[in-house]
Image 1 (cartoon, rainbow, N blue to C red):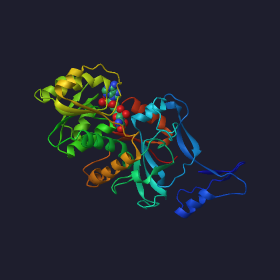
Image 2: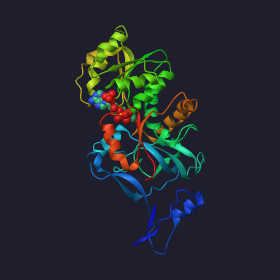
Image 3: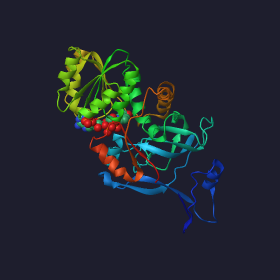
Image 4: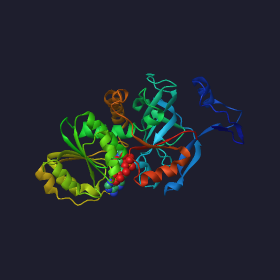
Length: 367
Ligand SMILES: NC(=O)c1ccc[n+]([C@@H]2O[C@H](COP(=O)([O-])OP(=O)(O)OC[C@H]3O[C@@H](n4cnc5c(N)ncnc54)[C@H](OP(=O)(O)O)[C@@H]3O)[C@@H](O)[C@H]2O)c1
């Protein structure tokens, strides 16, 4: 952390461990006619391109507005969307920097500007972000922040918000999955997939899942998956129909998109529901609408990032009520494949791009 004047560096004093008053003072320092700019470290997308375009740089500290928290980020984790943003094909919502990826954080409150004082400096919090999470500091609306369950480390907490909120919202608010139903989860070894398996297990749902390796499938079985299908070696349509005595599944959580589209329509039973939340294999498909009509299917799509503040607030409350207690009771676990130091962010992106991760990839440590 550095304080710059117009002409020169005047202090390198770190304030991260200072108390709230010192911190506030640090923001309001004036030195004669000097312009005081505090700068934080962040991972910057220096230009659209491969993982090597990610570099650690310095940018002005974010400033909290009314109703917001200033957070010292202790860890974040990668999401597939970060890779697209890095390549310049998935811009964040208006008002969010496009050159700092990062959809979630875990950290400590440095300053609270929320009137209700739900959170105070020093509290451990985690949450979703529209972007800018690969940084030393973030600001977030206090209403969307969630307390970190006491038994989770910062690294573990960083692996929770995006995938558990996505899976919980998709399966239980939109698809309205019920105990005893049969669910097909594609890319079951993905971050979202590993959250979906655990939530479905707790809800008493019977699961079949696909992945591109037997190793991912065995690990998903340890989390509660009942039947695993390696889509590279086995036709998942035949396998699902065989497993269900040709009845098909009640619901599908699809993160894959185009590649599995035709097969999905075949394995959904009459009145089945499918939610599409990811398009890793592409988005263009040919469709025979008569299948949807004849089987009376319900097809849904969902994305968290572009939801309104009110929608994100509601989801955070539902997570706090229904999902976070299950971490405290040790019924749910953040699934972390690897933790990379911030300096190795390019290697972390390559690892995800090569589809090698089972669960989440976390960034943490000293800058
Ligand atoms: N809608 C939302 O709000 C929301 C929120 C979070 C994530 N998502 C989406 O959900 C998906 C998963 O995200 P994540 O961060 O959990 O991803 P992830 O951990 O990177 O996992 C993605 C997995 O998809 C599989 N895959 C990749 N290309 C494939 C292809 N062509 N055909 C079939 N499978 C393929 C790979 O597993 P295999 O080895 O098994 O092939 C890969 O490891 C992404 O599309 C992401 O954008 C959506």
